[in-house]
Image 1 (cartoon, one colour):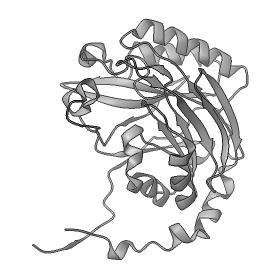
Image 2 (cartoon, one colour; image 1 turned 60 degrees about the vertical axis):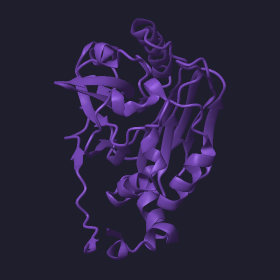
Image 3 (tube, helix red, strand yellow; image 1 turned 90 degrees about the horizontal axis):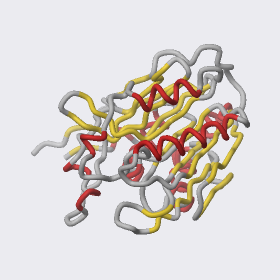
Length: 287
């Protein structure tokens, strides 16, 4: 079998334009929500999320980030509870944002034709800005509803969007276990990466090597409280700076953490980062 060079043929979707009237350039205010969601109770989870949005909006962030599958969680009737990307949950967030320039990124069980996806949907006052579908589905024998391959289809493209003139990317939970994801977004010129999770922890010790190796500002949201199996999720949602320094985090409780970050010098920092600058894609091959 021959060895083929790894060509830079990424499937990438970039959101067209930015939300109307959004101020370009400068620092970005991030609000990361850590929410305890009740498995399968979409109405209750949505109501709680709305309360968090209202509270966060008091501080006028540029983006509010929620965890993966925040509305339904991991359930056997995922397809029944799934919604179109522009369905009632998205429209409810849109209504909350009608007088704001803030964006909301939330975890949606998305229904699209015959397929169901674990998606992270970016919403503004004018509707859907971007939608990322999880590309790496977690599986393990005996994990039941956590075997995502039984309930969801994988997405097939990376998704980027602009926030105040800064290019951003999205990945979901298990995606981040593949360092190629963060590296690919860095190579696409992203300066911020948003990483919703739904698992026991998403601690800074996992985020630090990805952020520092790629000079990437990372905002990580995770669930807390009891999951569908009654196991405790500690959360550990955090915001990490481009050099891997922890800016803020939250453990073992619901709440919102805030961070003001400056992506304007990320690309310069990356150009001087030996762990990024030294890569040799001409040597990396598929077998």
